[in-house]
Image (cartoon, rainbow, N blue to C red; front, side, top):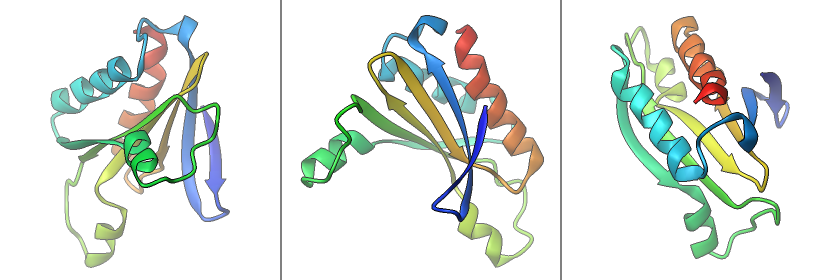
Length: 129
């Protein structure tokens, strides 16, 4: 797992999963993997799955040549609403980008440790699925 600061502002985590390390053969299988984990989590609620690749293509947006597919699985852990500022970092999203030989799993780090731990565990667990 690598930690990055996207655009020098946003703390994100990334797990690269080689296709040879997982039984998930395509993006649909990886999306289903994350949706299942979200549905099984006690304090998480599944919201939607967004086909970012199809959207970007439909509006004539730029897509890197080596990206084959890209989805966001959107969900929320929201255990509490202590103030209005927490709304800026909710809901959560796990990005799934497919390349020829690997999947890139990315998410913005959560300010809540249990949420971060869950997303890290799910992402790393993809290697053994």
